[in-house]
Amino acid sequence: MEALLEVLLEWGLAGLLLAAFTESFISPVLPDMILIPLALTNPQNAVYYGLATTFASILGGLVGYLIGIKIGLPATRKFIPAKYLDKITRTIQENAVWTIFLAALSPIPYKFISITAGALKINMPVFLVISFLGRAKRFLLEGILIYYFGPQAVEMFTHHKHDTLIISLLAVFVIGIVAYIIKRSKKTDAALDKL
Image 1 (cartoon, one colour):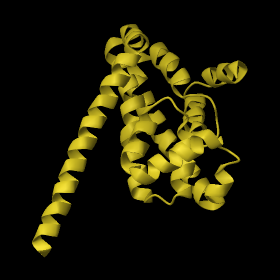
Image 2 (cartoon, rainbow, N blue to C red; image 1 turned 90 degrees about the horizontal axis):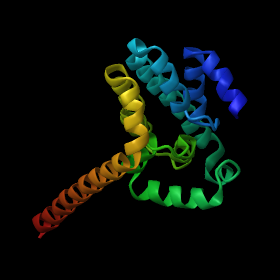
Image 3 (cartoon, rainbow, N blue to C red; image 1 turned 180 degrees about the vertical axis):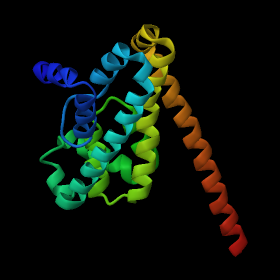
C-alpha cells in the first residue's frame, strides 16, 4: 500500500482524484493521505483540492451505491465483513440520514456505507446530498484550514482529532435527540387530532 500511496502522491491532483473516487467503493487508500501533503505543498490550491476531493468522492460513492443496487445485500457480504455489515445494515435502516452523514465524515471506509445504502435502496438524492455534506465537512474543511493556517492546521488535526470527533458526535447526538422529540411530538399531535 505504501508504494501505491507514493505513486498517487507523484501523480498530484490526478492521484488525489483517483484515490478519492476509488476509496468510495473499493480502494483502501484514504484521500486525506494525499490531500494533506498535496495541499501543504501548494497551500494556495488547498481549497480547490478539498473541493475536488469532495466531488470525486461523491462520484465514487454513487458508483458504490449502484454496485449495492446491482449486487444486493446478500452479495455485499463478499465485500464487507459480516461483523460490519450487520451493524451497518441495522443502523442505516434505523436512521439513514445520520448514518450516512457520520460515515461520510469519519475515517471508516466510506465504501461500506455507499454499497450498503445501495443494497438497502436508500433514497438516492438523500444519499447524495447527505454524502456531499459529510464529505465536504471532511475534505473541504481540511483544504480551508490548510489554506489559512498551513502546517498549524495539520498539527491541530493530529493533536485534537479525538476532541473534534467527540464534539462532532455529541453535536450530532443532540441534534438527533431534538429531531426525534420534534418528530415524536408531531406524531402525538396527529394522534390527538384524530381523536
